[in-house]
Amino acid sequence: MSDYMFVLESHLDASQNRAVEEMKRIATEAGMNVWLAGGSLRDVLRGAAIRDLDFTVERDALKAGKALAAALGGRVVSEDALKRGIELELPGNTAASVSNARTEKYSRPGGKPQIAPATIHEDLLRRDFTINAMALALNRGSRGLLIDPGNGQADLLGKELRATNPYIFFDDPARIFRLIRFEHALGFQLAPRLRSQLENAMIEGYFAGAPATALACEIKALALDASAVPALEAYERMGLLKAISPALAGAKLNSAGLAKFEKLLHTVLPPGTPGGWLAFLSILTEKLSARERAEALKPFDLPKAEADGLKQLEASGKKLESTLKSARVTRPSHVYEALAGISTDVVLMVLYTSAQRVVQDRIRAYYQKYLGQAQEITEEQVVATGVKPGTPKFDKALKTMVAAHLNARPRKVPPPEPEVVPAPPMINGRPGRKPAQSNA
Ligand code: CTP
Image (tube, rainbow, N blue to C red):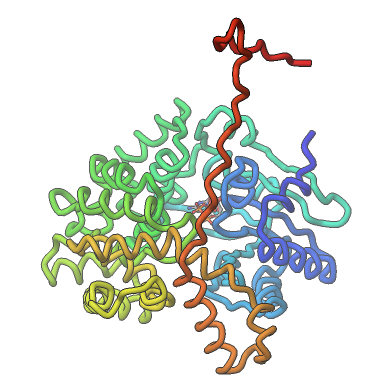
């Protein structure tokens, strides 16, 4: 049997491990049980990168979540008082959610549920798919115990999606969108019974009862996946895109533009580079008139900072493009300085729109060479020059050292010594056969 705590610890990055440790401490002090559940456990068990940490607790999730954010210097992104769940942003680009173990009872598709506290088993069985319905105990008494009432582990191995119960789409029609997303992102098959559940849900038109904002969240969740375009095309074939906004559906779906965007995102940028969602959104709505665009963007309910960023994307991209092609950019450090600190969305828009070869090449060189080389200059090296960290002098010294490092010509590697081949022995005054090699 696997040691799941070891699997977990070795799989998470330092910030995620810190969050797990802190959550264990908070739960122990409050005398309550805590589990890692949902997508984070699914991804740990299938050996994939984790997007966010999903904790489930027995008692006050909102209080536990706030304590976690406070202890780690993070912030609360949103709170759901009804479902008693809280979303957090923690340092180190770590997203986490804390929710209460609960049951949810619905009287109509996508309606407001009746919530009741529940055991972890009951909580897991009200979830969507068996692969998302496992939990790992983090409590002192049962630490490392895997709870898997639907045998999600077998479905992970068999690459199959299976519902935890017959009502998953009635309870939450947005799960139809999740299903298509997982099918494409994971490359899993639908179990036959889940396929008929999906067909019934489509015939009954459950998705019409789902709020457009919940559906738009699913578009955001798939935006940066390598399988985004096939998943969007599947939504379109199933008539689901118009449930988010009619402006996005039919011929207006910019599949070709998004395929180009996805290719750039996954070939030019190093894996895990944060950002890119606004560039995706801009290209998704590229073919729309200003009025249609405004209409299509409504369900996405963008926070003000994102809405402003989206509006400025084109102008910021033009500015970056003209900097990168300027005659003043002659050295690697100039390219590095032009791109360091620029948002991924702006860079992606320039890659997507610019016809200038030099601009494309410079962006590629930045990600593939300069970014890594710049990180070779350590804080200790800068401190050794006699400046104090956190001061403007330190920033200036760092900038100068990075520039010198980037602009230094690579040292020539000496060519290998020519191999000395022994002359063949002379036989009767003429070169004989090469001596046979001995392995002794
Ligand atoms: N969940 C569910 N129904 C939904 C959304 C979520 O049953 N409509 C449950 C699933 O168990 C899911 C967990 O809540 O795994 C956490 O949800 P979320 O973080 O939204 O999704 P993940 O499954 O973690 O996947 P991803 O991060 O890829 O969206």
